[in-house]
Length: 149
Image 1: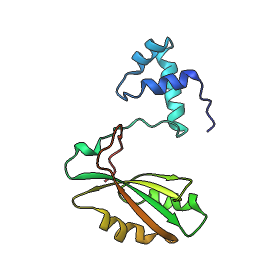
Image 2: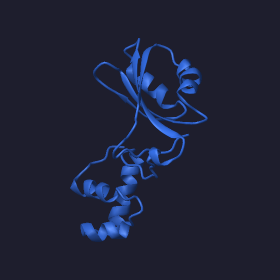
Image 3: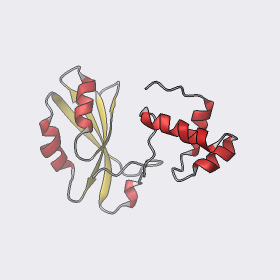
């Protein structure tokens, strides 16, 4: 679905930073109808442009850690490999990037499922991985992620 992102849609998205804010309050602030807000949000969600979900600060959950992993591939089919990595356990997000790595992963680990299990049980299923580099996040700022474990 092709959707036009105009100033009203951008303002609605900004207001939804608090995903609990009612459409009525958003409508009142933007001086539009509640039905307009509802219809626009529905279109953006249906188009895959907007997702309203609970996010967590992993640092606040005991025995959990968010890690960034740089992936260098042996193939140039980075988009296909990105999709494969996105389906692995613990993976929050995958980005195809420029620079030293082809992909950057954000992965959640806990005391029962860590880096060793991720590499041995998940990454080992994917072909054409040349190398991996792990970046442990000691302290994050403004890092909120969906809980995927």
